[in-house]
Amino acid sequence: MSELILASTSSARRALMDGLGVPYRTEAPGVDEHVPADLPAEEAVRMLAVRKARAVQERHPDAWVLGADQLVEVGRDVLGKPQDRDAARAQLTRLLGNTHVIHTAVCLLGPGGHHSETAEDTRLTFFPVPAEELERYLDTGEWEGCAGSYRVEGRGQALLQKLEGDRTNVQGLPMLSVVRLLRQAGFDLFARP
Ligand SMILES: Nc1nc2c(ncn2[C@H]2C[C@H](O)[C@@H](COP(=O)(O)OP(=O)(O)OP(=O)(O)O)O2)c(=O)[nH]1
Image 1 (tube, rainbow, N blue to C red):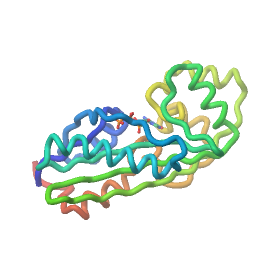
Image 2 (cartoon, rainbow, N blue to C red; image 1 turned 90 degrees about the horizontal axis):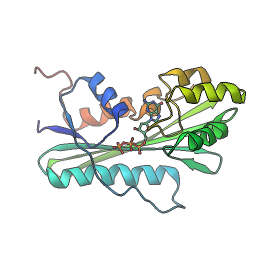
Image 3 (cartoon, rainbow, N blue to C red; image 1 turned 60 degrees about the horizontal axis):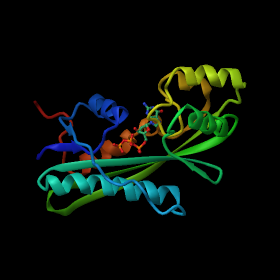
Image 4 (cartoon, rainbow, N blue to C red; image 1 turned 180 degrees about the vertical axis):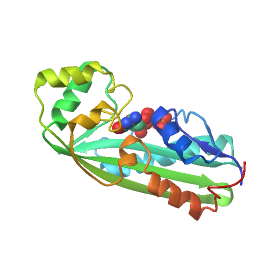
């Protein structure tokens, strides 16, 4: 198989791909992540996952390229990554005591015009916690670089009352679907190095 490139700067996505063990490398997509403000969350993440994968594939037309994007939907609000601690506090205040949906899309592009993609949802319900506990969670710094301002695999799991769906989808890649897309594309996931 031609090389596999993860079109991502995300350490969380790298960690998930490292766990899968398939040889790959990463390359920053370097795309404008603006989408129409009224676009539904699932359409927005699909559009951006494709945009990221296409940007890298244009540089490496013979490679397989995996792109992904994620947004958090709570009520009518759509949340991305917080810019600072105050933004993270506002996001978590919105999520605590409520149920929100993580939308993550993945796009796999390959030689010969291969294009497969999927979007997965994971529903999470957070405990309502007092402001002082929220401040102590913010002190962990887990909010940095995370859509929704928490890490489900870190201290953020102490906020989690219920999770329905693929847990890895929250971390950045729906690994059940990534495995399916790779297998459908003909990848040998246990190839000898
Ligand atoms: N470790 C961890 N990361 C999370 C969690 N929830 C969200 N994230 C991270 C994964 C992604 O890096 C980021 C979602 O934002 P984006 O989809 O825009 O990706 P990002 O800009 O980080 O990287 P990329 O666009 O792939 O270069 O949030 C979590 O529970 N744990």
